[in-house]
Amino acid sequence: MGQPPVKTVPRHPFFRFVIGMLVVLLSYTFAVGQDTTGDFHFGASGQTTVALTEQSVFEATINGKGPFKLFFDTGANVNILNPEVIAQLGLTPAGDQADIHGMSGGKLEVKPYRADEVRIGDLAITGQIFFNVPMPLPEIVGAVGYELMSRLVIKSDNEHHQLTFYDPARFVYKGGGEKLELLPNTRGLIVHARVGNAVGDFGLDTGAIGKIGIALNYRFAQQNHLLRHSFLFKLFHSSYHDVFSGGADGAAPPATLQRVQSVCLGTACVPHVVGEFSDGDTSQYAGLIPNEMLRRFTFTIDWQHRAIYIEKTSHWNNTDVYNQTGLELDPADNGTALVVTKVFSHSVASKAHIKVGDRIVLINDRPPAPTWYSDDPAFLQRPGTVVTLSIQRDNATQRLRLKLKDVL
Image 1 (cartoon, helix red, strand yellow):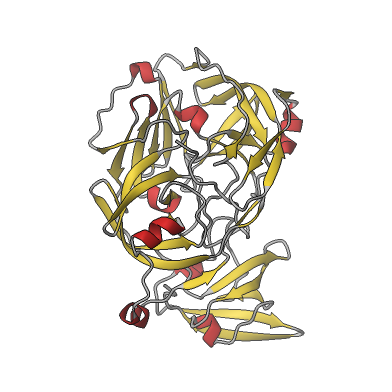
Image 2 (image 1 turned 60 degrees about the vertical axis):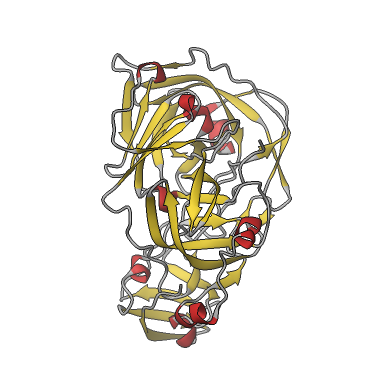
């Protein structure tokens, strides 16, 4: 089996969607051996629990220093760490320089480094290899996935925001979740899933952060007629085609944003999911199921038995909320202003004649407050909510009132 689809990084520190936040789901042409025999140790309980954010971030120490913020990235088939942190820790090189090939056809030159110990709560893992890949995010310095999943049983409790690691020799699943089979011979979580009436193999990817519920590869979407073009659909819904993300190796292929009827993991079906339909055909798999969908469930990964158990959270079938203005924005002035980089046609922003290059300096008479993973909260309110923007253009400032409307 080949590698799962390659991931990309966002074009902006906060964003609507990426096919993956990090360059970690990689197709690499080298191998670095990691001896998994006896390389992890627990306390007496045989398990440990740490805090987990909605964006799948937790804390760990490396070689006794930290704590550092890392992604628990189920799409990461290698460990990665910022070059600055590798230098700060003085990690030992563990091999020669190698090329990593990304989704856009370019490549990154990376090197492996060895950490003597990674400690997560009461869990200590020795001799872990990290690759020097820059992280495009504040504070978050790395990502781990396959190297943890292949050794341990891991529960991502998205109801209580906890990440628990278990010794697989002592673990017995006792929850009431639905069991999904993992495809063999992969370094990622690949499962059967259904989009509408079409069934395919999808990567489960907590490292794909944003407001997209499903990312579909071109061939799968075309073969199953998932991208809707009918007059009736267009009468009540919108779709947008552009380049929405890019990787460290360049821009991702153009894509179409459009809602799909439903996405089903096992018997759990989430309706009206925001989908990204890529023009590219970069993988043998049907696509990715990102964090926006996965955080609706608590899931337990039992890699040794090729199984993942999913349990519904209290918010599992909530409707996706998308940016209601139709704007893409970049931060400016240390985050105290937002610069318009794109205006969706037929959106409320377009009808208000907002233009690329405009600067939003106030939202409802306060400074903008986006995060690296989400738009300003005012843009995510219910349709019909009125938002007041103070916008600078050239040397003039104007106030606009936008009545929010779902763009998809």
